[in-house]
Image 1 (cartoon, helix red, strand yellow):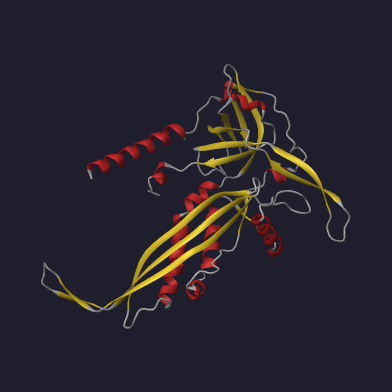
Image 2: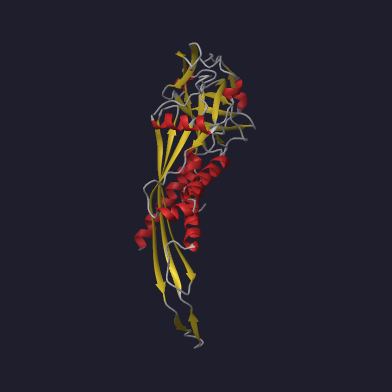
Length: 351
């Protein structure tokens, strides 16, 4: 037991060291950096409205097909409960929930299932960044009937009679998968589990489909998603774009201004990845119309990374590049993805 405690202390110390050394904001003196040339990327002909768009997500309907007990799952509205909870936590992270009509939404969900890019067929622009697929893998309900019984208080000698009750154990196990429309693949998969015990006084036998079980089933599902919310929220980051670059007067250090500030950052302990876009033209024809050119966009592998500095305002932030060599690869209009880091309290399960 003593050795186990020592191991736990060592792990905590390592996490604290990592947090304060590897994830802290880099402090710079802005006046030491001077403007330098930043070539335009192939994004220059895309609208400013597109460049400033928020990360947009579709939450596909929660899949419960083939899972029993079907009547409990249906009556407790697990599909609506899970979908609603996911949308709520995504909105809290500053993510835009796609609000297009249902037919277009379904087309985009189908495209994600086929690992296709999530483009608007008319404008050729990306209108959805991610699709979240969630599925119920198993949902088990166990019950135990406890008869009325007496219990004596050893201090006072008083005897208390406890009424009969039903004790229920509900196990929820689901999977959440995040499809990235830019890379056209599943980029994150989470197993979501929750086991909870509930009890209720009863005068009859236990029923695994009674109103109490229906209510607790819904609560169990909500708590399962709430338990996973940090992993979901910290995965997402807003789309930001490169606007300016500066070089240190004396050293070979570069900083880059991106269009993401305090209004959209969840934490200052962030790492930024840069991606270069490729814009291409392709012919497309709508039924009953003539063939026309449609502009599409995809992104190369990331060109490099950087760390957030102490220069942040509401709309912008300055990032120092980890490798000065990537300064020659970055262009104005390149994509910058802010990857949020968990706080030390999150790592220690204190939040």
